[in-house]
Length: 449
Length: 129
Image (tube, rainbow over all chains, first blue to last red; front, side, top):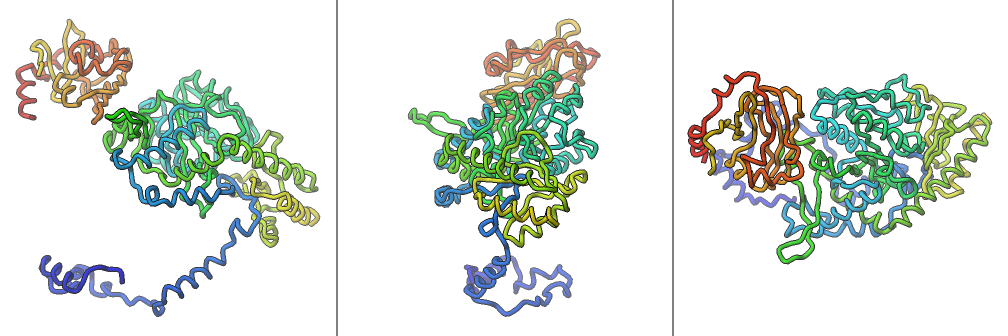
């Protein structure tokens, strides 16, 4: 109904290509496959379609109706209304790669602000205009470290406490390359602190990758690990939860060479897993090895402040096969959303969110640890996520929790066979004390059998 | 276009200046002119490395392009020009002097016969234009 061609237009086009009717275009397709009968129901009006889709959507249970204690890489945070209002402005929503600075100052300035915020948050020196998500950002860190040593160092050490999905993504990216991934095998000691990775570092090691807080929620200072990596010439990458950085020491001050992260907690809805935002920051000396777009501040020929894409010669469209990565696509709109979120909250607001997450999570952990049959898996300091040993399989508990409108924690047995009956529980500022008390109450039912 | 007659050249626009068994290598005036303003140079071999003719020894980036620099000969790297990283613009201003990239001790001097002399190189770049 929205196809603009008239019958006269079609006739003219058919004449031009030298055929009589549209069907003549398909003569190369075997006749029996040419016009298969489609078993479709009668056409519906827009109003009817909307009603039907709404009915299907209503079968979902979302974090708007449930108390959510599920995290494991994506977190349920409050998103101020201004985030959506600003990113929906036509100037931002429809913008494509800002190659022409004279047309794109607003978009370029937004990217510059994003980079500045991420640099401040991570304690690093430069930041690109984003990757797809936390997983691909880690994979790009591996790419960059490998490129940095020009293939002369091929070992990449992955902490077993790095998000399992990130490790899978790194393995997908490394497929067919000489890179050797190690450190996260089935025999890895999950209780060990990050210093246990130090003996694996050698002169053939390009990169060590850890997570902060780690996948199990634990907080470690990686300064010692960074020094050990540097002593043997290797780099250290730290994958972060940016909300935690509102409260914790920035990884740049621990000696990280690359900081990546999942930007979703910064004002991005959960949305079934995407689109999310890959944070990527590094030190100045590696800027030419970094993939992705980069915006810089300069002055125009009238001396006015202006923004441009910069250091573009390092990018895939010029360097082609010499580039570190062929990824230049970024999450421009999502990066903007995170910029608006960070700007609305400011340094103090982000700290408040982080403190709320921290204190609520610790209240929940304390209450759960009192229950018979439940115990905290690790004595290590944690941020907003912690592992609980459960008396029965996690899936059974989660079924029961869902009956009480509670979305339970992550079942760690999915990724770690040794962690059968271990639940990773996430708490954010969205969880009221009533939510937490309800969770504890339902868990008590299980412990009492 | 400055094409010193005492140097040998490659089709990929490197020059080599022989002194005994040691050759000093850089990129030609024509190459720097084609690249325009050079903003970054990185020598990717180190002293003591063995290189083969055609191996990448450096990367240079200008405001509009990135290019690899290839070794014109096989041999051992005796030294690299450490000052290029801090002042890559020397490649534009002094391509045959301060912008030398590496010094290489040749494995086989006969390899020089495969390179172009100044008139042949001049002819090559004129044909290319």
